[in-house]
Length: 505
Image 1 (tube, one colour):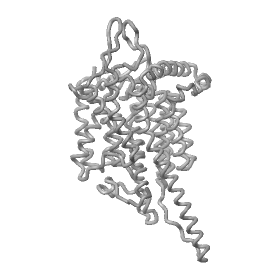
Image 2 (cartoon, rainbow, N blue to C red; image 1 turned 90 degrees about the vertical axis):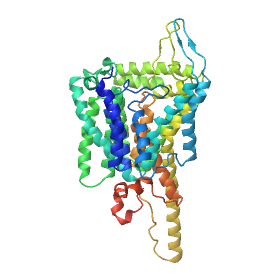
Image 3 (cartoon, rainbow, N blue to C red; image 1 turned 45 degrees about the vertical axis):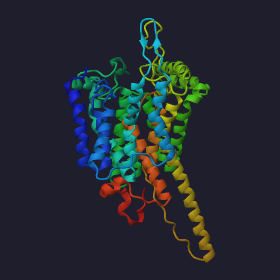
Image 4 (cartoon, rainbow, N blue to C red; image 1 turned 30 degrees about the vertical axis):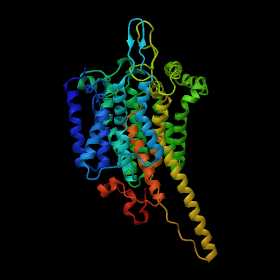
């Protein structure tokens, strides 16, 4: 059970968030509020579970505290809802879908020795509140992290947090994952799952070693993005940090993240921003359509397993176990395809006598499908994927506009017999493509794993805010984002000092 320090940390974190929003620009305060909570606070089961309220843990408690701090500390309250109509629709369905789930799951599941209760009105109230709390970080990132400098702040924060976190990571690699037990008084997962390859897979204060490995991967990709996007003497430091993260990632002993690191690293280092966003959009499309592909037996399961077998027999066995569970869980989910089975483990298969759960949900996609059905799946994964598609759309429209401007300028020059003047343009953020790639690979990883973290929502919200900014600029609505008006000195793009680059997004 969590000790007193675990409870104290949860109690004190809202105070930390309040001080961050007083001391830092709002965008940076948001980043460090969520990153610090994710990396330092005790994982479940440490939480505050008040009657008639959703449980407040290391994910939900910071979101609530951020919402309060933003509306009471900032002189200008940010606009909470997205500009894009589809984003608003997806958000509304995401928050309100549990109401339909509750009213279609009033019946209990009865077994020989026990039963699982049906859902009732209290759930129809609590679950929409839970869902809204979950996306507060996303909505705040959309409002406060909109410019190229905001994107750089996020990437730098991920790199710094990764470097700091590497110290306890290396300690657990050497001594075994014990820090959560030593500090907070309990072990957050099965110790047997940390033993791998003749050593240990670290966890620190995260829920599982997979989550930790994915955070190291995120820090590595963020550092590569900084190396690609920045100039000057800092690039050498970024390269050294990236090499260091690569070593730490290998020590995390998670094969999937090593594959992602190779593929995403190549995309970030070698391809243009437009190509990076296209690849991210393809990954998001695959994730959105995965349940359909799985239902139609179009996922090349045998090929995937054979490739995994060639790398590691143990990993192939683990993957096969996950895929088999996906099949039976998807079959159950499709018995209530629209709104799912709801909470309390109703989405699982159970022993008919004892009622004990007999299936395992590893992938986040099958969790969402089973609990909330198609409406919940499309709303949640659509909300996370939409920023990538909107960025891709804005890049395409901008490319077309640039071509039209060039052709018009050239035609005028030939007609008048003068030299064509250089067409004014807005310089793209060098961090836009890498952030889209990071989100795209995170979406794909939610197929085998449940790696939805505050970092996921931060990146998705940042991309959505930037896509909305690009749309406003394209339409001539060159409004200053709230983050810029409140702290213009820290939210201006890196190239602002050069008067030729006044329009870096």
